[in-house]
Length: 229
Image 1 (cartoon, rainbow, N blue to C red):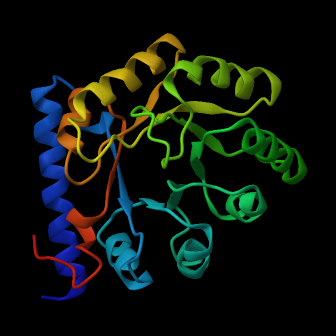
Image 2 (image 1 turned 90 degrees about the vertical axis):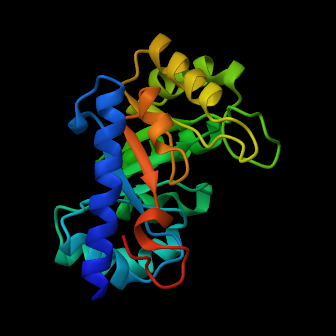
Image 3 (image 1 turned 60 degrees about the horizontal axis):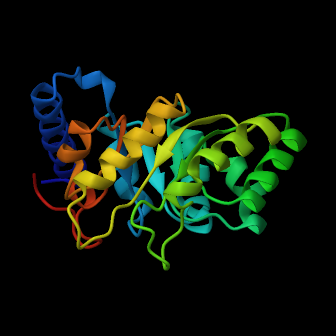
């Protein structure tokens, strides 16, 4: 099979599983957006997904994304790109030039840098606050107990368009309590978007209210040959 055929089949399989999870949760399939994660995969795989109809993508690193997406966005003007990896302040200008959503706002210094860049370029980007639900010291994200105050800071002091929250649960724990925690923080702050769930657990995330699921290996494979669906 061609690369486009394989990736199209994988996308169809993931979307079918998403629809089944939505049905089980009493939700409409269109309430959840698939973010196809191209981290570590060459540009031709993202292009194959674009040709198969996928339009929302995620990348972890600004430099890697620049190497793939400057050209892809010229070819596919309606594609949307989310930054789902940590953002350093010296990459803020480049990130804002390329990405449509920043999912990893997690500290005041970054919030200030984003606000300054939004003012400089005259166009804000939708943002999510990343919450470190497992309070893992090696992982980015604001601690859950500090999330409410940080969300207020982003909104009130920096006028950042915070649309919702994002989390990455610990790999060795049941993700459900982490998804429930993120849902609760979003609810009490009036936030509509919840980016949670990856290839291994996105059906569970949908049950807990995910509106964005970040799926990479189930679409593109394990950074080797794309797997058949």
